Amino acid sequence: MLSQERTNLKMKIFTTGDINKDGKLDFEEFMKYLKDHEKKMKLAFKSLDKNNDGKIEASEIVQSLQILGLTISEKQAELILQSIDADGTMTVDWNEWRDYFLFNPVTDIEEIIRFWKHSTGIDIGDSLTVPDEFTEDEKKSGQWWRQLSAGGIAGAVSRTSTAPLDRLKVMMQVHGSKSNMNIIGGFRQMVKEGGIRSLWRGNGTNVIKIAPETAVKFWAYEQYKKLLTEEGQKVGTFERFISGSMAGATAQTFIYPMEVLKTRLAVGKTGQYSGIFDCAKKILKREGLGAFYKGYIPNLLGIIPYAGIDLAVYELLKSHWLENFAKDTVNPGVVVLLGCGALSSTCGQLASYPLALVRTRMQAQAMVEGAPQLNMVGLFRRILAKEGLTGLYRGITPNFMKVLPAVGISYVVYENMKQTLGVAQK
Image 1: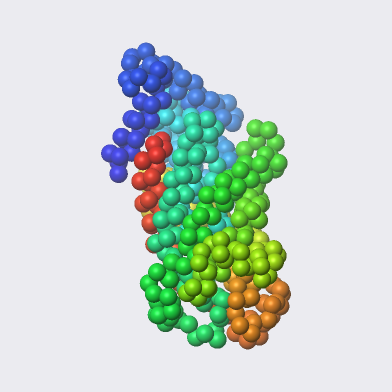
Image 2: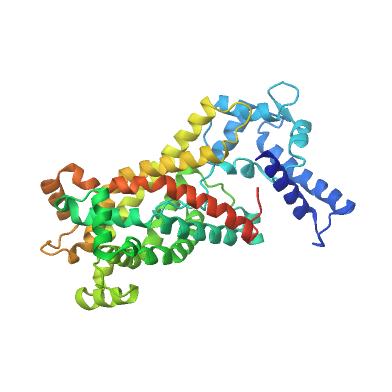
């Protein structure tokens, strides 16, 4: 791992310094890289040195990171200082700062803490997560679309790999306790009805909607950030949460008919629909245009608790790790970040699951024989009256079962696709 990081570091210095792009880093280019990089390091140092005394203290790190939306304690700030402090004074002067970052091509303090943000490529098949920000360098160099492409491909592979669990979840949500469907019985029933291939029914739509949903979400996220912040102002945690929630709502509005199609295909019997277009045509003919937005309100309402709890738990887990397990580094590593992301996402799902279940029921209730066509409030009342509180969590077990394999598969594919697409490694 360490040798790989050093290799990535050397490659970034090489690509940054190779001005004429001739595949060689000559002495003049190297000297220019050092001078330009030293200027950037000086600006980063000055942005941290709030009292302009030529030294960075723990309190100044706390203050600077708060501006960037990252809350840490004095103890955590001291860990950062210890990793840079060469003379043991618990302050960092310009010489120590320069020596530490001279051959580390970070350009500002925001890049230094960027590893704490959610990875843009991790996809567990639930589309409510708050997008990550891209740096200006990533936008200018075109790295952003490569990262999004890598994330989209990783999401497609991950969703396809866990599609049987996703379809089982939908079946359990729609048919409720009256079907007496458990995990093993559910799989047997689906295979008996439509064969092994039926386990992936509806997955095509789930994969197809990744591209438009991601594009709209990231475009909307940038626009909402601009509306909520002034020119040059850093985006804090609150602004990020609001912007992300609104971006998620915008993306869901745009692709929601595909969510309905996915549910209908997943619940449909063998031969009921020949494909996505046939399903759309039959829904339009029998139920009208409004059918494509059934369950839209509970879906939107679910975004706020999901995104809010996801972010809050992630911050809590991160702070706990820094307080109790960080020793000589503040970089938590891949395993810790994936663990924090999976657990925080699971907590978010737990809070928003009843709304997700009602949304799915509303999307599919026209297909269930004898089921009354109820609105959101009516469905909540019916479920609580007939199935109790546990009825609002039907299908949550297969939903949780897919989290760890989805995260693992998505991460492995994402990292490999980043290398294939030439995404610069930090």
